[in-house]
Length: 257
Image 1: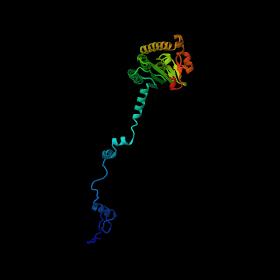
Image 2: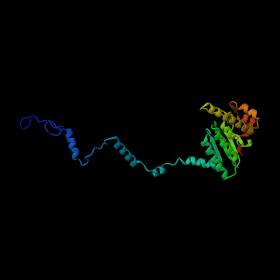
Image 3: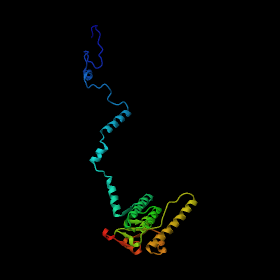
Image 4: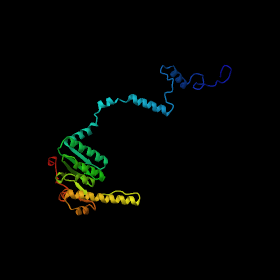
């Protein structure tokens, strides 16, 4: 009751006696504190949150120079491998044969040929790919002046076999567990009937051209090559030797010569 006999209405945060309640007392203490926060410490929207987080990341992230000093640059490893292979005059052809692989391989062959007339060792392990890309590498091996040795490993198939057959037979080597595959080219056809007929004609011409290349490389009659490549024709190293596709099998680098 107040002095006029009326019941006092409690102020929020105050007790029934009119004195500040615990919550109000705590708030008053914060206001008197020198550490009192006068602005809302929490952002009002997502943009402010993002800005604060970005600012925090930029301020706390170590500099790139510090990272370089603490951790070795692993990007040097591929460069070291490339330089070492180039110095040894080794070129690796692995995976599917496409225009990117053909470009990189031909660039390396041209660079090595310009540096020295010493032999180049081309290691081939490929399931095949684009015939035209294989043609590019095949022709480049024959184009440069220095001798090239192809060394089969893993499997040498389709366009990979075309690349492998580029050097003279005595320069075609392989490791003991290599497998070879010769077969006719294939490709997807689509479009009008006229377009399909044109594509089919081109594949027939391509097949004949490839058969001539393998007949020359192996010494086999063209009729034998045509018959064998009508379906997948697999060869072990021993069979490839008898067939004329392979010059010799090597066990170690000392056997390469």
